[in-house]
Length: 202
Ligand SMILES: C[S@@+](CC[C@H](N)C(=O)[O-])C[C@H]1O[C@@H](n2cnc3c(N)ncnc32)[C@H](O)[C@@H]1O
Image: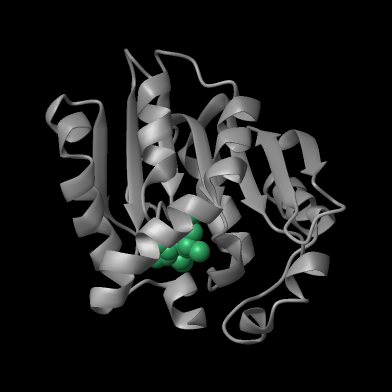
């Protein structure tokens, strides 16, 4: 099961897991998009889009811009190509295979970058954050959203393949790569599943 959270694969990952993630992560996705203050003309990148709920929501916000998505699960890329074919055909969306450790875009491409529930699986969190900074334009904002390590430690699945982070850990990584104006929004602290959105500006 932990393997599917990290990298959904096979028929189960493709048919079941993407929809499951879309359902449980809709709220944190909506909060991340609201806090990022995405404008209609923005170029936006989502890293590790999974079932694609974030891509679909961002596409509604960028009527004159574009949303690009990368994911290192080939099944998730194929699924997004099928489910989001209308937005892709209209030229408002592009999805492709890609790893946060080497984001396949030139420097200073995006106004906004978001990644939700993925940092637990990055091979090198500092390098991933550095890559986010690199592809942001000057003044662009990046959001890394998580469930806090404190809450996640209660779920048996996180004993395998997950690396847990606090909001301070994520903020500190942003600081180390030179992002500024770092803001932490931590909600639902009393629930078993909290929501942490950390935003930094290049
Ligand atoms: C737990 S799912 C979260 C999906 C979605 N963001 C959400 O919140 O519902 C993690 C996703 O990140 C992708 N992923 C994990 N590590 C990655 C990496 N190093 N580079 C790109 N994508 C990655 C996985 O393939 C998977 O689709």
